[in-house]
Amino acid sequence: MKTLGVDIGSLNIKAVVLGDDGILGASIVPPGDEIEAGARKAIGMALAQASLSNNSLPAAATGTGAKLISFIPQQKAITTCLARGIHYLLPSARMVIDMGAESTTILKVNERGRLADWVNHDKCASGTGLFLQQMAKLMGVPLEEMAHLSLQAHARADISNTCAVFAESEVISHVHRDPPTPKEDIVAGIYASIVSRTMSLCKRVGITKDVAVTGGVALNDGLVNIMEQELGFKVLKPKSPQIVAALGAAIIAEETAEKGTK
Amino acid sequence: MIIVAGIDIGSRAAKAVIMKNGTIISTTICDTGPESVKTANTTINSVLKGAGLSLDAVDYVVATGYGRILVPFAQENVSEISCHARGINWYYPSVRTILDMGGQDCKAIRCDAEGHVTNFVMNDKCAGGTGRFLEMIAEVLGIKLGEIGDLALKSQKAISFNTICAVFARSEAIAHVRKGVASSDILAGLNEAIATRCLNLLLKVSIEKDFTITGGIAKNKGMVAKISEKVGLEPLLADDPQIIGAVGAALFAQERYMGKESREEAKLQYGYNDGTGDYYITIDSRKCDGCGKCVRVCPAAVLEIVQEDGRKQPKAKVTEAARKRLSILCPGYHICSSSGEENCRSVCQHDAISLSW
Image (cartoon, rainbow over all chains, first blue to last red; front, side, top):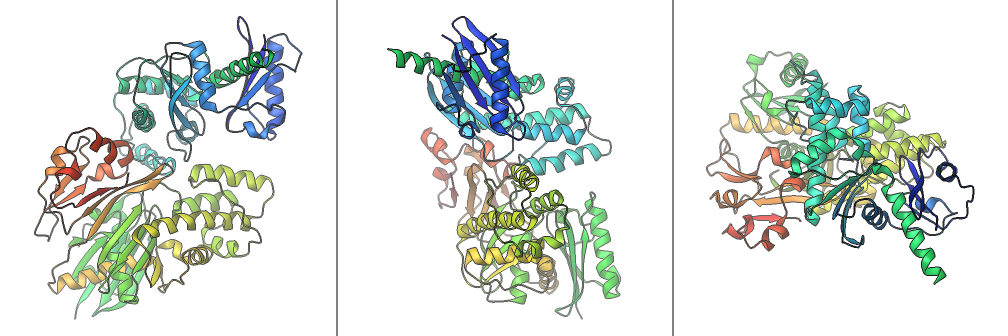
């Protein structure tokens, strides 16, 4: 059976076409002004990759903007989808740290890929992808390069504020210090502050191995490196960490469709 | 003849006042620059110039505010919370509840008839609801900070914000501007969100008549109108609410010069409220005897014992470094008490410590 999963995030829309032998197509597109049009575009691209034109596959949607698209009636919580998605890709994972553009979600998964416990933080920008983006802009370094820079750091600049606005002033004062704090160290400090925020969330549900990292921020090697230092062990990274929730949605669509035919 | 000065180095503006025999003879408000010492010097020179005096003529200087430690010419420094209470008491002795809205923080303070602080809460960790937040939105809308108060009052239909986070609110405001929503409606919605947040802070210390608003934001008419609507009380506003902290510092300077002892502050609440909840550690300094047991049992080392100048007894405090990340460092009372080990509350013989989460 072939199914479709869509994840409407705040910064990107992700679509996955799932077949019996694995992922047939996947796409990541920015939503633009119209969420529905963006979603259709993402789905179209994923279908094209899977060499399908049929747009009537069983489908499920998830993500913050899922309720804004009317053409996929089945909608699932992002936590449930992440649990299914990670279980499919990395069955040994018992804990998932999902770091998106505007929220961080920590969840625990049991051996069957079912959600056991979760916490999330979506009330403010501290420790999110948006925070990182803002810092990159402030320092005039592209997001990708920031990761490389942090790997060369000798120390971590102290960023004591978690509020994105106040942290900005702190970073500015590091840049203007005499002598200025090296850029590498500032970036490492920014990452450390995000990681410490995430770790406090993790502690609320309890850290359990194996830990997998998903979401756009997981693409950032520098940040994941600091996270591993704080955790004291290596984390698992799926090949495309951004599409895990969309994949989970496709798995759920499959489960629902099977139930229906029985 | 007694000439004293009070200087309040805030995060965005530095204020100073000179008093001669108990009357204000000169005031000033300057921008806070990146170097605290330089800011302090510029501010004091400006206020001295207004009074036609030199620094030698001033008998006693008290500094307050965020940059109070780096004022080289001050004999003493006093917390801005005490100064706001004392300052407003000089204008309106009937005030019992103060909302201080500054550039980077917001505080709710309760005081008695003599202007002594009896309880306070502050939020200095999240930019939501601070002057900095308003500045960011004014920038998005392309209007001057001084104009936003009047503009918000012209609103026909306030839009509602889904968030109090300054970063998310900026994205929301940009989206509204693109859709062609009037600036006045965006500002009115923002004032609504900030006022709700202030009300929550005030409710923590409980609101008692009379009520006042101090700090730079108190000059924003739209915001003041919104807050008085929420609180249900008309605030007693000083002529210049922004200099109240400096006035309080000058009053302290006068008292100290005349040799008066300071009185203890009562309940001290350390922490903040952010999008995820309330994180306050309250220490009742009337009950605390400075025994230090809580410091020894804390697994996260967030407490310390401090002997403050002019005070007889040392007291427990939350360390400066921990105040802005309490929710991350301190596990919270429930986790500590369920672990079976001793914790700050269980070892305190006087029940002086409480935690909000």
